[in-house]
Image (tube, rainbow, N blue to C red; front, side):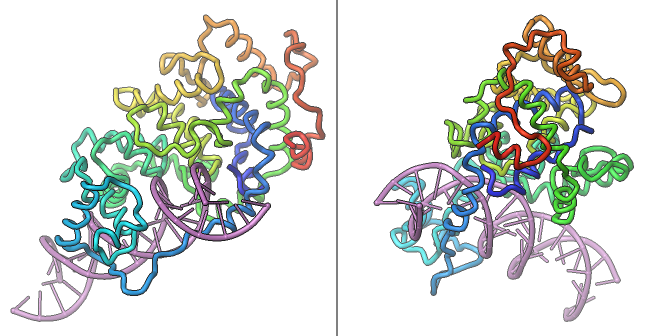
Length: 375
DNA sequence: AAATCGCCCAACCGCAGGACA
DNA sequence: ATGTCCTGCGGTTGGGCGATT
């Protein structure tokens, strides 16, 4: 969860300028999830100070390249006792290594299911498409590529794919043409930001973000499946701490969301995926599968049904995720949301608002207001 | 042939956070 | 409530090695 108020600021570092329907659809969803998980986010600063992994710098431990003999010892031990218990493993296995080193050696090199050798064209395509969605979430990408480790994919990306994309005039961060990327404002560039960018973004955040959040959240909050959202945001639901490798794309996305620090990239992911859908992914079935899974998760999260790809339309250089019109709930929702974003507010709402009572009435011009609201 | 360069990738580092005592 | 253990993660490093000068 959030470790500081800055985290929250980063998380909402998405101004209304990004107002695609798809974005707001998810934005409002995630915003509302916070209503029941915010209560714990401030106190996590204390917890993070408390938790410090002791470093494995014990005397006499070997570092560097592994020898065949060491590999054999490790393999034999894991085959006999199974994975886990890495801290005590070196002693038991007769290795002068720290547990962490053993775990990495096993996970990245010795594991029997690791596929070694050249990456195929299909694998490279998958990596590119997955990177467009996940950014540098190598473990998330690795889960979709059986037999490949996050380390291997990361290395391959940095040494081969990245260069190839640049050569082709594609920005490896944004997956858009380099010309286009250079003219984009900071917030829309890529999944990663350097420290300067981050701090700049924080500075640029004013009360309007909080105000906007409150408005959207209050308006649409009652609709959402809070328990599902809670899980995804990481407030302790069934997906929290989920680390078991899985072949389910849906589960993967949830796992990633819950494990990573919430920030704007979580939302950019969806926004970018939407943006990419009609161009990058249009002829790639594996990427479409990934893309479909993201929107499956949106459905899981919110209870709103959506059709994928066919209902992504562009208008005025923006992409829109169109909800399934056959569902009256969705039509209503989109109507409301659209009117809301146009600033019509309650005065012009022709809809019955009785079921959309605000969660709480707060001063929505500051984060203090939000504090009260979430508290 | 020797020196230098640049690339590659295995391994390391430090942080985060869940589980548990 | 606090502290430790354990594991996962993303970023970085540095040694090996082939290519080039």
